[in-house]
Length: 355
Image (cartoon, rainbow, N blue to C red; front, side):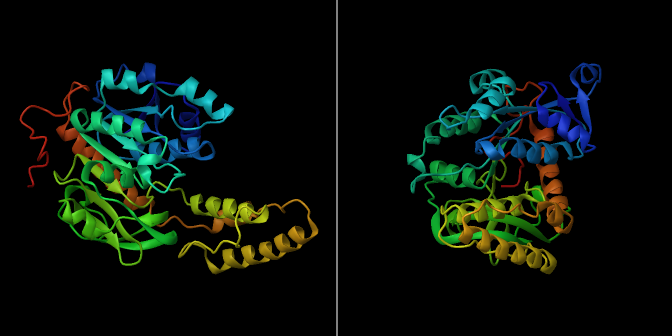
């Protein structure tokens, strides 16, 4: 069902150009279709700010439930921003204070780049936990991505992530571990998910606190887990929202960091992502980089246009189905009044009736 362009956010125009169904607000107001109001707390750095909007908007907009989706994007004032990002936020983003007054049916919280060893020392910590504590009482379900998952399970359950000592980076095979859960209904029992992180939370840590693991990988660990009530908080440790080119862009940034001396070693390829033809192109590019670096010239142009047609996306359909299942359950359980989390008769501690 369609997203509703109620704010003029450029992301809507970009998605419309890609062929996604976007409704003008004046048109949407004349349709007798239920609205769902979904918050997106976007904590990603400036370079990824708008790409992250598009990634999560796509997944929500592709879900097949009968509703109009009003996306309410906001961020935290404590996150450092450049001038262009500040202008974008000032023009298109909403204030959390306003959203907590009006209410949300569901909430998505993105990852964020950490700068400290302990998450509680991060500048975003107090603002993020203010949002989480409000959502815990007032939102039907909150979907947390990657580092947001690490921070929130630490705050709510005292679970601390463990450093891997290296970057878990690539596309990994996963399997369902609780296929009867409605969030993974009618999806493939084995599927791919990208990961990109230096830290990990393990199944044993989650299960010791009563959380349930729905999908994991032998190589990459847990991807999908839910809070003990089985729905109020949904945790992604991977990045199913990634575009097919997202890991390539991360690799390009790492290569650039090596070229200017911010990284001591040349980055390895993301695992299980680049095809042999892509690796051959990138190996040839590395040779040109090494010559240019030795000569002290500008970095050669990255061969992005040659690579994009060769990059598969083997996770989008599963991600779309999973988010569609999540939206469908929110639709079934949430109150028609957006400031109330549940319909009458729903137990907030067992909203799915599965415990």
